[in-house]
Length: 305
Length: 157
Image (cartoon, rainbow over all chains, first blue to last red; front, side):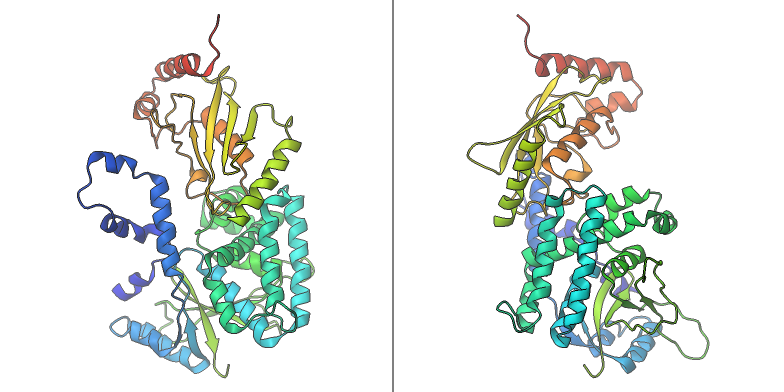
């Protein structure tokens, strides 16, 4: 149990202690008065930059080690996961973990598959997203830099042009705050645009999460960096970009019948304007698999990869 | 650094183009530093700030627009969410709820909206917040009006 809560560090709350520890131990009143919100934000940025250095790729056994003294159900489930999956890549827990996991996983897939058709398809979806934002009244200059940077990354993982990059370079870029955060922000714009465009579809789901209107939800829970993602965000991003996503759930729920199983949910993008047909018996199989533990997303790697 | 400069330049052009679109806001960039801006905003009507013109100072960080601009009132103002001495503003979009979808211009609009709809439950100016929270609307309004006259209106004569 304790192990599990320690994993739930997604979000800025954990920063409080660090700030207290690193500031002057015997401050006089003036020092505290000068320690304003701006200093706190700067310190948070520095901590995040440090966290960004860590994105380890580990065998699944390291996940089991983490829960050694934890819930037996979780250990059982990790064993089941081990039948299909070989490894996990950890994503930093700063509230952007879903988007960052998606970014790396998608670009890595393109890098490995060199699937030009997929890149072309994605690009035309990105153009649609641009039009969506324009029609919703967003000024071009507020989002175009983020779009341009994502398209640049997409182009760079395809080999054969002057700007092609290696796996190692992709890793470096994903850790580079100025690139990674811009791509996360691109996804946030795309997600927000999709939710607002189909607000009637998303409204009941948003009502179930918060008391906010669709507009308020996008302004407060989608567009700002560091706001955690839920199924609403995943559905919208998957639909907008036309990329299927599998989320495998590692929590302590069990159906206490014979043996445990691990639940997963496939987000299959809508085709031709139909709402997201998630969970249906589709032939499309997601090439992006994320591991969800309450409060956090990491990337899962299938065996034989 | 380069990205923030490019973005600010686009905002600058937009401000020049839309100069007359919003008569309540006059946003201007420092002649020699694109990271420093000032704005003059009109106090919203039917509030104790009506008739006053308030000056705001913007300091834009290098990580803009991923990080919000720092904004404070240069003109003295009596408002629950503005620090009476420093002019610091307590507004969610300038902190956690910031996103690059906001612009310097729309931040000004949000501040005008905050002037019209104070949130006394998260006060930076406790005296002002306490007046509102205890229901002394008249006391709050006369204090706010007095400071508007003293600090935000041109001296007569």
